[in-house]
Image (cartoon, rainbow, N blue to C red):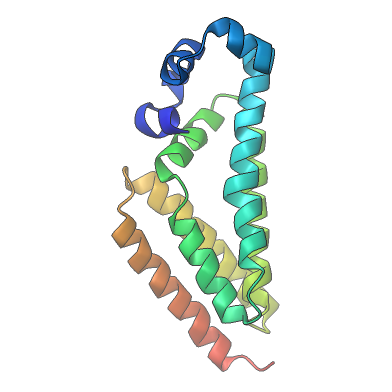
Length: 171
């Protein structure tokens, strides 16, 4: 993930990785078998740790507003540089593209679940969820490196929009 964040997906090569980890290519092949298995393992790690885990942790608080706030804080902490590189990589690699689609879909569904717990209007909750995912992807695509303070302000404002709709919603 560090190579992706620092140098982009074109720099993610076995030689670079082995050098960084101080292992031989033989050790790499013994562990992963081949490059394709490594890529799949890397992307599965990203999907589980930076999407599934965030959704799971965000679902724990009892109060729906606390769940939204926690998801916001966890989303701010994702490795934005690596995510930018993965999204660029997905443009030319169908396997990476499939992982990217799944991650985007899972993130949308997780956010929509939280927002629907606050807002009775299903269409409005869906639209707000689209906005939230678009903010994350947009900030990552527009600002490289991502300015974490700016992202926090943007997400705080988005949380305020959700809160205002929730305050006007009847449960």
